[in-house]
Image (tube, rainbow, N blue to C red; front, side, top):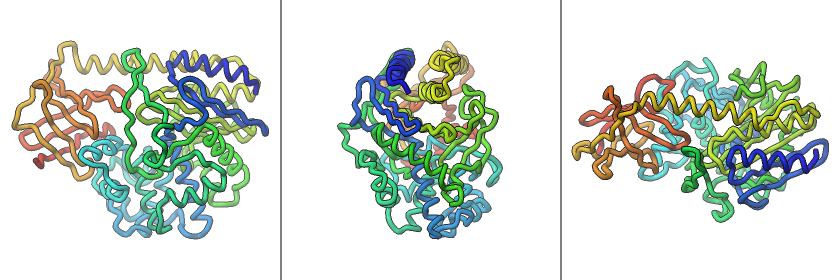
Amino acid sequence: MDNKLIDDFASKVMQTFSLPSLGVGIYHFGSNFSKVYGDASENSLYPLASISKSFLATSICKLADEGKIDLDEPLKKYWPDFKLVDTYAQDHLTWRDALSHQSGLPAHDLMRFTNMNKHDLTLKEKAEHVGYLQPNHELRYKMQYSNLIYAVSTYVMEQVINESYGTYEQENLLDPLGMHNTYINHHEAPRERIVKPYIREKGTTKEVPFIAPGKVGGASSMLATISDLLTWAKFQLQTQKEAADKITGQRYLPQSIMQPNRAYGGANFAAYGFGMMMEDYRGHKYFYHSGSYIGYCSFLGFVPDLDLAFVCTTNMDSTDAIFAYAYQVIDEALGIRETDWVDKVSKIMNKKLANKEAKLAALKGKNAQPVAASKELLGDYENPGYGLVTLSEEDGQLMVTLGKWRFPVVVNADGQKFIEERLYEHELLPITIGEKQVAILTEPALKKPTVFTKVR
């Protein structure tokens, strides 16, 4: 690919999407290119977020190829104390189900943050807390993306190998591939090399404090330089081509049906393998996984027919710039330049965000008021799955602590109360406050609130 075209495209992406930095990496027919633009360097570390799942899934499939586990055996066989609210799912959830997001549990992502309130949980404690989360479907009914089931899978894997999953991945994946600038957990990485996180809020780019995702294992814990991430993408491309007769090859086969991740590419089908998504694009099978965390986004993709692998990283929160990059790279490999992907994606993204803010504004109403704090309501409230939320007072206003953040409670003209939170994006979480309990709609897919009981 023409390096000048890549430079020009990177500049346009950064300007259009207001990115502080952008790392790009491309492999195509034996040629490699990687570069970091903006306020970062080739040595900078970017959180990979959910791309971490591809490392965990690769490790688990490697263990299956070695005969140490069976993908179709229940997790409970390997961790007898495993518990779920749905006892049938508890007894029958297999590695295959877990790695393809078919546990019956919705995301429950807020639980990762509420359980950071007073102190972060260990990986084992998080896996145990998952046992109290409400399902919304039966086992294998449909795909529902779950960071938490990947965290559980990480802990169960550790019971099989009798060591930390990080040690296993370091020795069996990172070291053999020469990925010496990849770190399993945030606390292991040199802090000064991690790029600063940013979000877009009310049309401005805003730096936010770095918050580690906590101990969620192979769900979203890793960091890497752009060149190391490209090495991983090339490994995935090569493995997909060569491992068809191994269990590892099943990672790239449809295990569960999903909606196309974004409407941009006009996919006719989409599926999830193990730690890998797949779609069709312009008649080619296209594999990928994105990652998003507070202040960061990352992307890994490859197209076997084109001998093409590509990655990108940025320190901007929840931006679809990574998808504009992905489709543009594939089009360049195909010699197609009929679509300005930066323009197309930015317009769709901006419209989507504007519609969302308009709906939130309508829900909140023009005359929403802060809820006054009353002393008898203040304190800690606990749920066995979600952990603690704390009600406190700030300048007379009621505040709710979700993890390490405090957010105001507002009430609209209809008397509905909401926590106005900004973890990933602007959201209004409905909250009902009783004498000894609060109920918060922590997981919209459940269509019922999670109850927290006052403990102090």
